[in-house]
Length: 270
Image (cartoon, rainbow, N blue to C red; front, side, top):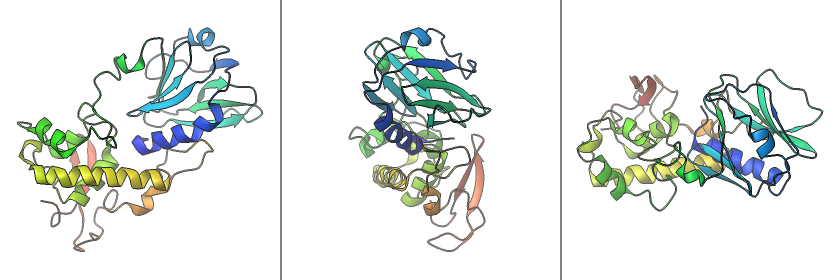
């Protein structure tokens, strides 16, 4: 699943192509994604100019004078810039057509979404209750510490809760907890402020590294030119169960948490 760095890399990738460009047509090949694509956007977006491309959590926002297109890549989605003469692939469900190219949504599992609002998108029900951005000044150790008091949920699940902080998915939560030396099953309410200081720092480091490296090489992710990111070469624990820990050389362990795989070191994470 594309995580926050991949979504931000996608935003940075498509923005130079579509900023200040006029939408000439909207093509809906498959309307039934996670929610049905509203047909009204065909007329609403016609001849509209893309004023900005922003992001909130894992949602991309394409902003026009008339309203805001809200995009989510779901489990397997990707956006790419496609020439008009390029072949339509099986799971190319949606196009924004510009003069010389199209912005094309490819989503094999159809868990993504394309929605429309004329109101402030930050008040949309999908965005209104999201927690702070992990790379913002609002995301601090003190915030995590106070939010976690009396929480009995595991700390990994706690930091993956988008109402607590957005965009810290399974891969980056796993990596950050290893970097901070915190056991993923430790109860969030029992993590000290000092440990949260280490964890918030680790989350920011891991996400920034991913952004610098171009995102994680995941099976389903590609950037606007169809090229994968390369952060996976730096992963220290995710997907490495049974391999030696980079610090103590003991074999890494693996458990299931909320139906997701967590890899960690029994010796280095307490």
